[in-house]
Length: 195
Length: 195
DNA sequence: TTATAATATGACCACATGGTCATATGAGGA
DNA sequence: TCCTCATATGACCATGTGGTCATATTATAA
Image 1 (spheres, rainbow over the protein chains, first blue to last red):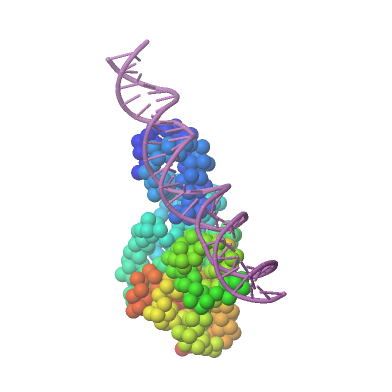
Image 2: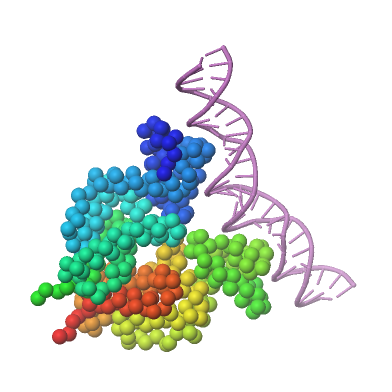
């Protein structure tokens, strides 16, 4: 959590610091991102940074919170009753939409998912838990085979949701095609087939 | 390619340098690995390192070549006629076997697959190409649905083969279960079903 | 023995990193 | 006006990085 001195700053200054963080974390993964660079790009002295934030983790968490506020205004409201498959496809479409308006946000996600610092791994685990619960729910609903290993499914899909957009060179059609292809394969593999 | 001065070194010294490289690259991913650390662990002066190798890429390639020689003595001979699915499961079993004898080798693989330096991405692309060809071949054999996107399949499986062993905490049964579960799902999703 | 060429060596360089801290600045109240 | 206290600031520190290079050592040949 940023310190109170940070929140007392002018909106303009806060924005500049946020922008600098986004710029850095969308270029280098968390463990490689540099406070010095953020400070330089934000145009604030090093000492001030530590007056505002406890360290890299602190500004990262602040940034992601701001981003998620921002994203919730871009994407459609989440439908909690949607099936796992629908949710994932929706996620892909959301990623596209976000990518059009704030491509840096997508880059941050892509870099996050391939970091392996303890800090980031912990964050990812939390995100995985949510999806796993969704799969478990769909098993009870009779949509997914009960014998399926949820963790395995999530890991297979995880990389795609967050990382594939980058690899597809921000080509929307290609990305969506791949996402749908992936979901199709997994769906075929794990769904309960009604004949 | 290491310089001739390196190859003229005593086997003992070469081994020490190789070991130091393995130690470093199994601890930190390529872009984070440190020549200084390698030099320290190998017990050679910095200047000598640059007399032997052009840089980090150079020693990395040398190391991987030595490793692949080593691995080929551990694992069973590759059956080129095996189906894609069989090959992947075999790969998982190979990983286990290698992990028993040389766990560092597995760690190197796991760290490699999540690096994003240009150098490593290029190496990974080559490995992917091989697998894609295998899938294409199995399509022609009538084993895999022709409409399937091979790249998507490979990416889903890639993370597992190289990375999952680490995440499973070197627990063999867990790892193999997960691998088989993943392959099963994908198989269900992409195989041509004979009724 | 002496001259020459190959190799070994670590001090050194420029440049990064995260983090600290004494000092400077400015705002508010007495 | 003067004092106090929150904030701003950048020089500075220890530590790391990749890479170089003048010098020392050793092996080889004459």
